[in-house]
Length: 556
Picture 1 (tube, one colour):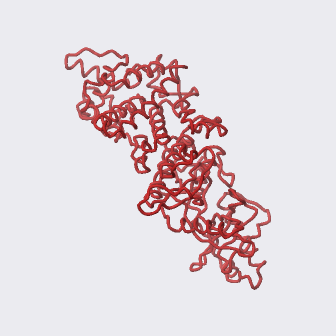
Picture 2 (cartoon, rainbow, N blue to C red):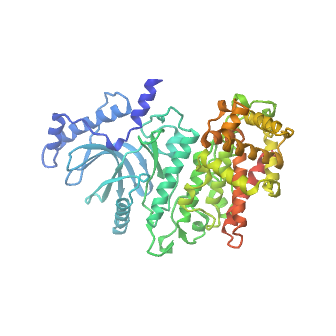
Picture 3 (tube, one colour):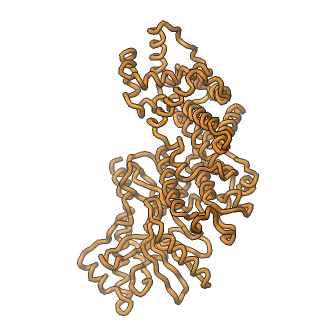
């Protein structure tokens, strides 16, 4: 087990920073590596060194003949191996494994080399524009550009980029990287870990935020264009980077949309409704694609159509034009039977014994995020910066703070908001309507607290009133933790005296509670700005999402 973990850590290192063996023999070979003399011998020596490095990085041993690397350009900075194809694109574009040698340090590193064929001057200008975009945009969540060169005789352009482990397709569909190695997270979790998924999505949003701040529109976001790279700065050992800026365009100063001369671009099933209808191309089309990517990443059910909000590939464009959402994340997160927390098992769980139960609330928030991102109303779609601030990405501490604001704002008036009646039915359908079985220790505290104050214990059946009791219970423990553990010392066994620990206990124990709290909070905001309409529209979209999910569960 330790050996596997060590191997995973090695594979998770930043490959672009790896150096080839620097023995004197290899240094001599590098100095002799010129086009004029001993080309074959020099290339063979370097290929052997690179072959050793690749097998060392992959953790494999092979006696196979090392590949012959072709010299590119007059200065010999790039070498690529035509036998190691990493990916392919449209119009004959290929991505190969190769090396990039810096002129100053004379040190080689493994890279991905994008080879592009061009036949006309117009095609060459497009490639040159992509290179200029790569040079201009520099962010931790964007693919790193290293070098470019061309072969005029064969009309080929070569772009060297940092080497990554694979795309989101590799992580969540193929379950192995471009070198056929499994993804092993540094913390030992599987690659479909819920928090790892959110980590990747947050990275994508951060990269997109930067692209939009620089007044660029990517125009081709999709799982294939999101790569996963080793990263030592987080517990998972990986980060997401956006790649393929071939279709990216820069907005003119003071403009919010591209000219129609930019054409119909993108990939089937990932283009927004306004693009398919020949409308304006704005940053909002990237937000639409991001929403689709959220569902692709977060979906627990990998069956055809379930990983995309608009269904199977053949139906997507038609459903997008009709604004007909096909599936939801939270309707599939808990389809499979599994083990739930032991202290939350009771007869009330007989109808649903779900392995993903504690993430159900998060899945609802993810569905709400997807809903606003893919809305046909581009004014409802959030900015990339707004996506980062969405409650789906909030910590438990932030959610507890929101709960406190909500309690102070509503107090005893929860039953006046129609969402409560909807969620009551949702809870009852899910078979999780007894709070005494969901958060038993906190419930025991609440019963004792009321008894001390001369009040009867409330009914355990969920209602608007009992939901208010839950809110009050959370707030009391949050504000008076030291007094609460004196009343019931067992509270210390399930939570610490901080908002993060309390939030995890309450919002995983009663996973539907926070989406209801948040939708109340959003309802308050919408009421304060009804004349403007935008906040109300966003509220309506998220309410529609919850209604649709509720109807799905009630029909089971």
